[in-house]
View 1 (cartoon, rainbow, N blue to C red):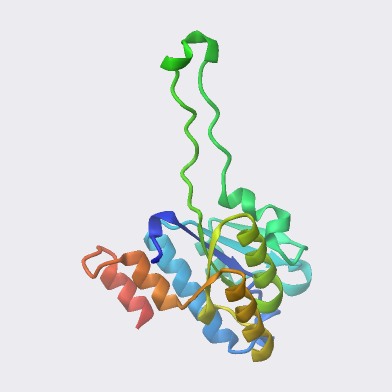
View 2 (cartoon, one colour):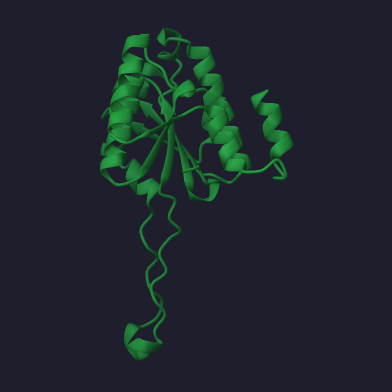
Length: 200
C-alpha cells in the first residue's frame, strides 16, 4: 500500500521553541518537518499543526506555523482530545432547499465533504503527544503513517519505544523521502524537480 497525496493530510505535533533544544537530533527532526510541510503545500495536502501548553513551551517556529493551515493550541497530550479530529474530518454539507419540494426519487443525495482518511503525522515528543494523538486517530479509524525521521523525544529509548508501540497498533512507519516520493508517484509529476531540491 502506497500513500496517495489526494487522500492524505499532514499533522505536525509540537515542534516548540522551548522544547526542541532538549530533543534528540532536534534540528534534523525540525528540518524534516519543514520539508514535509513544504512538499505537502506544493501538492495541496492539508497541513495542521499543534502546540502543547504554548504559554510554557512557546510556539512552533514561525516558518513551520506559516506552512500550517491552522495550529491547534492544546493542553491534553493527545490533540484528538481537543478537536483535531473535527479538523481532519469536516462535517457533511447540509442539503439545500426544502426536502419536501421534490419527491424522494428526484432529490439529490447529500454531498459529504471530500474525505482524506490518511493521516501522515510527525512530531515531539514521540512517546507522549505524538504517540497519544496517533493512537487516538487509529482508534477513530484513520489510517496513520508516522514519519520516523521527523519525530523524536528527549531520549532515543523513549522515541524507539514509541515507534514499537505505534507499529504494534497498526501505524505505518515511514521516512520523509518515502512520503515525498509516494505522494509524487512519478518523476513526470510537475512538482518533481522542486521536491527533489528540498530532499537533496
